[in-house]
Length: 431
Image 1 (cartoon, rainbow, N blue to C red):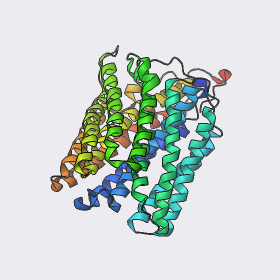
Image 2 (image 1 turned 45 degrees about the horizontal axis):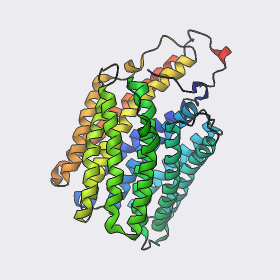
Image 3 (image 1 turned 30 degrees about the vertical axis):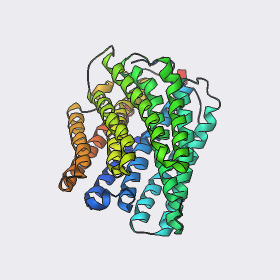
Image 4 (image 1 turned 90 degrees about the vertical axis):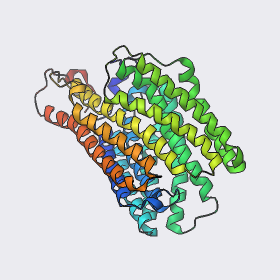
């Protein structure tokens, strides 16, 4: 495992990222239950309340929480920055976001304006009290690497997307949904998913792929230019979408081609890794590349079909591409956090990262997850399989929850014993 260039002494307390990581699968399970209880005709209508609720249960509740947890851990380590009162703000942010998502689901489902207003307040504040200190901390970064630059850009897209999202949700709370709602909703969704999550994944991959898989480093062009090119494409897309929607496909092509270039580079790196042993996380990276290729080109051609397959494309890109990478990251990051924090406290007789999760369960979880995503795609044409797909997805997320709790239990059990070495003299700021 390649650890060069990391400011390990800046690592935050393990509880800061873990609270977000451990909560994420719960919202995925909740989203699966909501899918199970929804009518397929309503669910596959892009602007139906059911579709909006389930989408945000996944994007905020799962993708958002995993991303925030990753940022909490990686910013201090990669950029060498200290986030102001990190333990306090992560605790309050986590509480507000959990209640914010639950309020949003309840408020939209039961058309409760007062609850939607609470959801707006909780979600906006919950995100901003975490993201703003991150942006401030980045101003003093010691290591402004391509990964850190990508994180910085993704945070800017995140803040803008959250403000737009708060405005849109406030429209439901106040009953003042304006004519610009649809345009802003499009910008909100594209910038949040591709600008925040997508660019963040690219930046994190620059560090994670070589570190965890002992793979070749990315080319300088990829590390120095791709994030800026995609960001410019997102800005051009927003301009065209507002003023010249008939030409928006040009920017879609622009964005898609460079995401495709990135995932192709990841595929090549994984093929050329120095230790070519395969595990479920490699499978997740590979299927994410496949789904991305299908999804982004479908996104382009959907412009010629009056966007009638937008929901299906969202499943392919959001579920097949982004969600796959998030799950793969959880299987790597959580065991690494446990190993790193125990090692830093002087514990040497601990399981390896690969031993902290159950491989058989992770394989079963992968199979169920892949079946569910494929099932969701085809259920658009064959609604009867939606129930089986939802059940498969719920079970896969339950297994994921078990497998990421397992390393945490190793940590809890181990710290109750005496360390192999006394590390107090080193003053490691690690919990």
